[in-house]
Image (cartoon, rainbow, N blue to C red; front, side, top):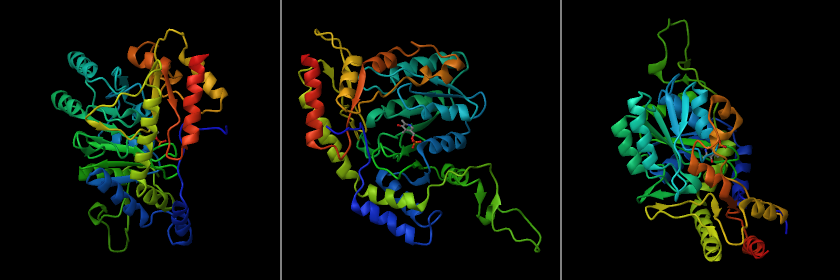
Length: 389
Ligand SMILES: *Cc1c(COP(=O)(O)O)cnc(C)c1O
């Protein structure tokens, strides 16, 4: 069998045509497709404003900055995530801490969050920002988290890099009912792609305006932002903040615009694949990803957990055997604080028990819209064969 990756983009003829059109057009970047893409994203996720950027990492950076994360502030997040969800704190010179995950959802544990907030209040170390990560595409318990934010006075960013198209309590993930800002990723392994890309959505026009400034050097063309000057000078723009070049080119937006028209098709396919795995593994010593009735997951990942079994087949063995069979299984995630740069800050192995036991037992299986029935059967048969060994 040819190599099967754990994730990959799905590119149609139409995607290619739309990108080619931009190449013949006037604007490769800073053109009309940026606001068009942004409008499609906002209306899909039901948020008022959206700022497209060149990655979700950039989106996290500007989101933290506009929420005024500064030196000596605390940012809290999940350890079961990609490092970018925590790195943004370090880039702002803030301090970072991690809340252990829930046994069932693998998202931040609300009970542990509450306990830690009570302790932090006593020590005067409450976080300024919490980043809630919707692991594998299933939303965190945002209602409870929002209530805690009102009680303990912190801001919320949803890292929905996995969760475009997902729902929570019948609202689309990204509606920002329970958060200040939600960010999404359009990396090729994610739900839709722009090559590289990301977006920050919000219902707050001030936050949005500032994120748009930071995306493009902090330069404004708004008359109200231009300094007073003599008639001899012409000021058509002014730099009023220290920003970045985090812009998403029109070439990439063209791909995003067509990809979003395919989003429902992608989600249906991901759910079909998940259902097929669920049924197949029913009688194996495997824990399938538990689904919360309040959520509709976008199934960015299909994580299985290898639990203790009579035949003593462990995760590492299964992982290696699947690799041998050309199946691109993966581990999501190494707890962020275990990475050497976080160990240098002082984090020790064992800090979040549940995240660590998950890390030792998880394998993420291939799931993406183009995964064929034949490929999926091969993955399933391979797992059965390993268990029969
Ligand atoms: C992919 C991912 C990111 C980073 O996305 P980029 O677009 O590659 O910068 C951040 N957080 C999570 C949870 C991710 O999965």
